[in-house]
Length: 236
Ligand code: TMP
Image (cartoon, rainbow, N blue to C red; front, side, top):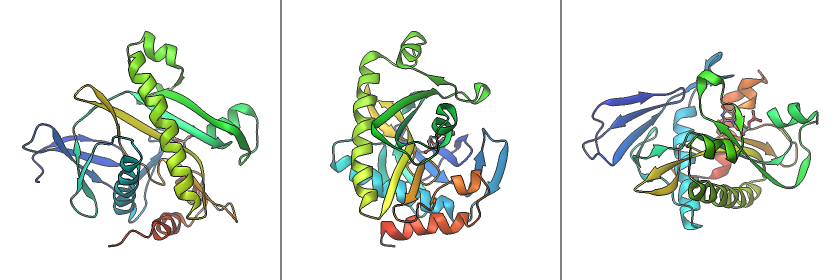
């Protein structure tokens, strides 16, 4: 599988076309941004970790009945994926208070919820990805009712599978953001799951092992990504 031309460059990934119109190659960068691109930096080794971690977890999710865009890992940083039309929703599941939820609700971080929450943001950088609900999404034709239903079902299933899996690594899955795409009329999981897009805390020490270390200048950013990768035990 070979890259043809650069289709799109995002904040953390480049996407290339291939000679197969149904297949794209994603190339993960070490670039990191926060606050809608206001803060910029590099997390050395992040691209390879996020690529390999995403693929590893996507395989587990497939086994549990969540369809994903994964085709094949090509090398450390690059993966062949199904070309989807991204549904312009950031789908966020939370198990504990943290981040924007904690701020909005005037709560400290790390309070466990009685049950997980689900929320949507409209994927639009110019607007700063505003919080919306499913009625906005339907009114603006961002997704159909059937699609929202599938997304909701898959999002909670992804949470169950990942929560259990991270628990086995002594990691608490605090919250995460996922994105879905349309592929031949069906909703499938796309984008990534990584320390960029999940909040992962050590279960015992509550040490943050995710991008909050970069967002909040907590130091040891690379170490945190490496630590998660090490616990995953992915063979090289
Ligand atoms: P939040 O608490 O800032 O709303 O973030 C919720 C989750 O979504 C957290 O795990 C980090 C992730 N996230 C992204 O993946 N991309 C983003 O642009 C933002 C703001 C959050």
